[in-house]
Length: 80
Image 1 (cartoon, rainbow, N blue to C red):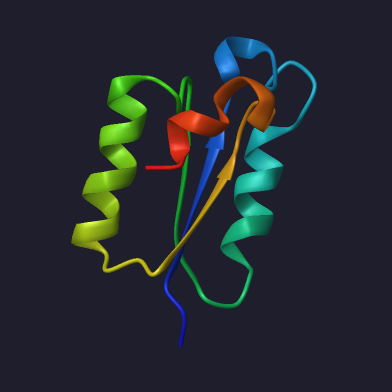
Image 2 (cartoon, rainbow, N blue to C red):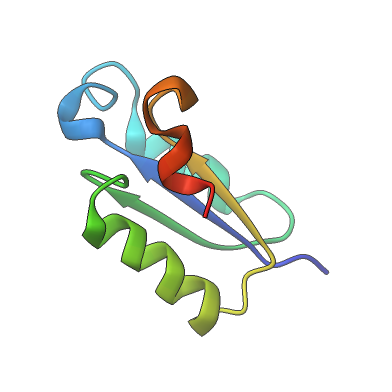
């Protein structure tokens, strides 16, 4: 069974002013294999990135989904 973590970014309001973040979080929690769902104001920040790294270890995640800004803007941030 997969152990997927889903991270939904507010993007300082750029995303959360358009997308119902709580609905995305609730829907993600219902998906098969998803063991952890978090939303954060700025996933690209050092705090947001550290949260993902910590969760991968603590919750033994083998997959991660980042719902955030376009990869054109933040793609390199999450490739490591």
